[in-house]
Length: 413
Image (cartoon, rainbow, N blue to C red; front, side, top):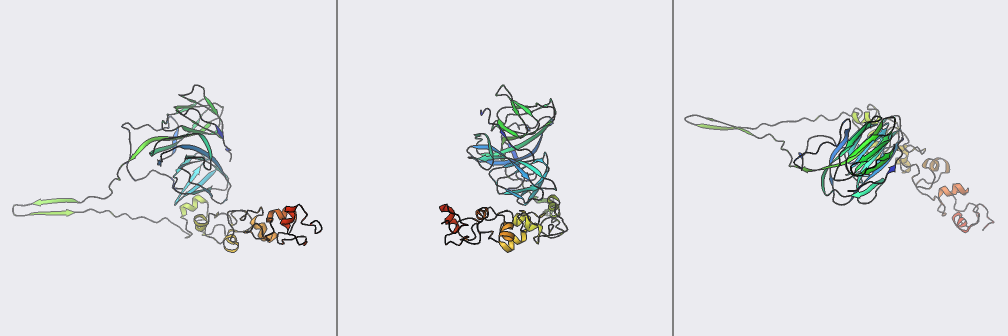
């Protein structure tokens, strides 16, 4: 058994494709007796799916994402299957062709087969926790607990949520395959296990991995909101269920002759295309989730259609200037060639808008005059970012700074 793990705290203020129940391969548990749901009492599974887990060590990681209203969709890497949990506001998760809106307290499981994006869904900020099952070493989040091995195969992943009233408790069964990860979003709790006698105190924004059956008790005077990520039982994937209708045969006989006839029944399915009223590349349903105008192909008026902003450029269809650097998205893409979702495309410490509109330096070159000083340093020193030798003493500004002389005084070198 793994015992207790380290406790980490996260700021709680504030892909792949999202898994949903549907038709597909028949799934059947390998054991003769089906394990029960990890949710008991008033707890509920808010996100679930079957994922393929490779052989070798894995560990849990957690990160918190603060999403500003109207901000550009934030890309999230695909290090493993993700549970995403909204803890404030509402957020939109775009994974492949799938869009999922998460209100506070809701969750979704996203597969690890591609990068996905998240953004605030409305006029207010949003907050998301990502709970990731990562193979191998540390990735982009904060590791929680020690590595564990489940063995190769398909397993059921569940995210359990419970709001525990003051004095109340909830229980979560021992997952056996891996330690359960407990994340407290609101309130304070005490977590006891069947393996360790003393309980573990966790407050809002804290997470811990523990083995054994868990008893989580509200230790405060206000309701506590808790999420538990569970690696469930191994699942076998059976052969797909046939979807064709077999032919039916009828036979009639008489004294003088016999006739055999076959009748084949076929089914025609008509799929209705989603409605895209303004023909901008986003369905009306998607626009409702994002907050764009389904009757206006360019909601923010930046000369880029909403669909292109979401699907091609990763810019915000609600902001003319997604990175708020003083240069509109259209100008960044078609005029200057700068990054419309990076405030400072060349990383010289001067925003793209300031370079284009004020210093007249090159927003794609961190040292416009090639004097050995980047444009941001020249602004701090008072040298000319467009002239390699500000004091005209025949020595470049970068050389003077390196030698310890004054690039503003021709007599100093």
